[in-house]
Length: 239
Image 1: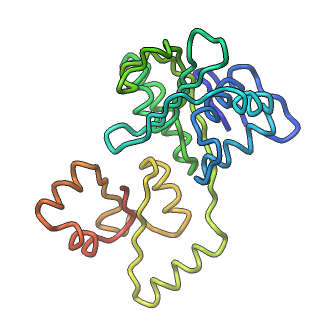
Image 2: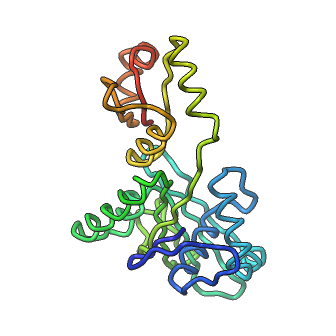
């Protein structure tokens, strides 16, 4: 599904998308690799082929003139596209919702409301990406996407269901005395929903989840404690 700043939209084969949802999908595929290998980007491409095939074709005919890759400090991907004879370039951004909202310089009140909606989707076990767009002069692109003037569009929410045998396998491991640790880069709400589906019980774990940030990892490296801490903790981890 996609979720605009106003309404959620479920994408189903044979259905048509409202303009706002179509714009989100347009920009999502423009912010993805042309030949994707990441499962989430492959899902976005598949949806785009179904619902906005003209956008997929158009991206084959224009130039990708700049890529700003995802980094630990900026959890978003930004692509800048330029059509032949165009005076302005189009900017497509997707990434961690909090990061994309920050790049769009949204007021705190609006961010808080969007975070509530994001948390609601995360509790369903959905993976969530924020999506934004903008325009820029192709001859004066900044060194960082933080300098762009972007407009927040909404969310792309992707379902990645557990394999049917995961809960039973996890139970077998527990009965065998094997401690299972879950490591994920998902939003905490998404991770907790998936962990619960898998059979983790946060009520019985001393560490239902432990957020690991780039700062945390660096501090552990400096203290040479990372491997020991990973081995010592139980439960679902967020990286």
